[in-house]
Length: 199
Image (tube, rainbow, N blue to C red; front, side):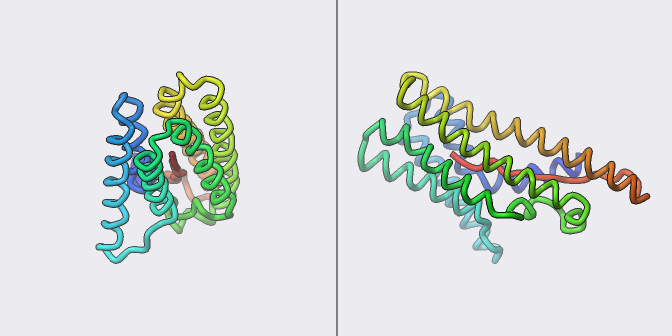
């Protein structure tokens, strides 16, 4: 349980703006209200880190940029087609950022890195692949099944990330415990924390 909390805490905090936006959109909240609320949450996250004198993580900046971009595009254009296609561009950018090796290291204790760092790197690429797949799915839904887009945007991105997070966490736990037993170190918990990136 401790390792799960270690994994989930930073993940939820880093992606808070996007999570707020996705939940409100899924509940049928007005798009402008959802983007304003998501923006406020993302600004609060970045502001909190700066006030504490901590380095703002890349995911926190991405989350803030995404909701700010969404808010600006929504309010300036009022064009629903732009709003629907926009997440595909964002997912492609986030997926490209996730191709950088070691981006998941922030979400695991340094002492565990030697044990499961290679697994984290592999999952980093899996996360990138999921972002690219989500970008394509969003584009298809927005263009060919427009009426379904609000439901898709409010449910699928968050649900798919939670599902991959569960698989990622379980895999790292399994591999970490197996390697620890081989090294004669016992079966202590091996934490993991992939991101929920972004909307």
